[in-house]
Amino acid sequence: MFSSKKNHDRREFLQRSVFGLASFGVLGSGQFEKPNFDRKKIFTSLNKGEDSKKIGIIICARYESCGGGKCLRSVKEHVGGFTLYPEDISLDVVGFGQCGGCPGVNVEYVPEEMKKNGAEVIHLATGFVVGYPPCPYTGYFKNFIESFYEIPVVIGTHPIPMKYLKAHKKLSSINEIKKVAPYLLDEDRKIMIDYN
Ligand code: SF4
Image (cartoon, rainbow, N blue to C red; front, side):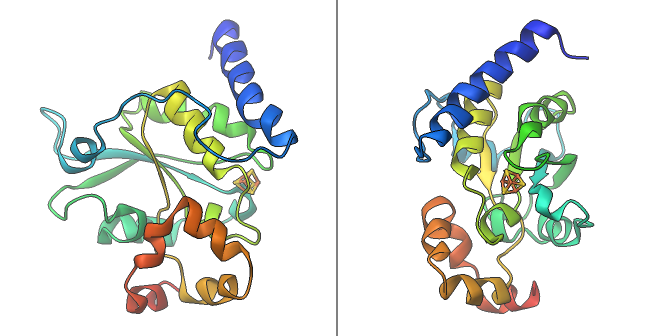
């Protein structure tokens, strides 16, 4: 159980950061003071005594019935948002949860559970950016988790399926994907087709 003081602090932090500013239409990123993560080291080396990198995955609740097949496959194949980790680093999923539905109240809680299980990095699933429309809170969630829980966040899990890429190219939402997760657009097209 969480202490009520911690609950209050977390809620106040999230409300001030996400809902307060979001309600004024200020959805950019960079409003928070974030810990200075050594990202290169976090992604490319293991903690002493560990034989795998522990990760947590949060999915968009619009896909809450998803079985997680694409995300788990991409963990194994080191593609999409997992390209960052060298092939010889094993990845271990220690937490899998969903945001709780708009505007994402579970984002307050699930990172704590994941951290307790040893998560070193949290991935916001690719569904955040390829849903129609992309989640407007994605950048905020990343900043909130990194600032409040002091754990690095990667936007993206599995490669963008080609059929989604084609649809977004006809929509202005492709610009949102370019803004928050441009590296997902660099994926090999054959892999994108394979993830359809
Ligand atoms: S659009 Fe964003 S806030 Fe809404 S359900 Fe999906 S991830 Fe959660």
